[in-house]
Image (cartoon, rainbow, N blue to C red; front, top):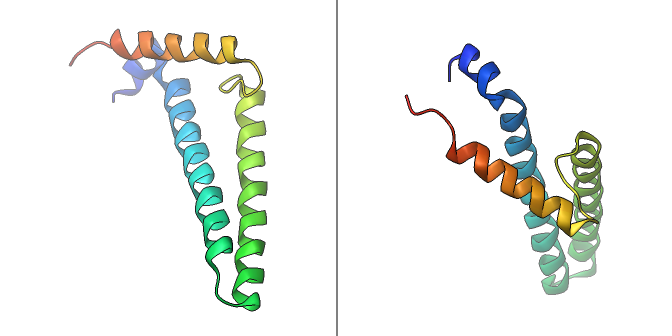
Length: 99
């Protein structure tokens, strides 16, 4: 997208928000997958390694969540604010100029 159009439409910030949300969703998926793998591990050594990866994934999820909350892009503890933000993002996306 043209930088001028990004500035006019406010898409710079929205792009950052979309990338951050995608990263958060990937982190959530990683946590879920490692948790499942820990329960399916065959040996104590593999379980220990997977548990370490799970803890690292949980830490990454927390870092991303805190970053997004500081930016005002994610309201983990306020469903109404998160719904309002999601509706604003939908409205922005629906009103983008077509090129």
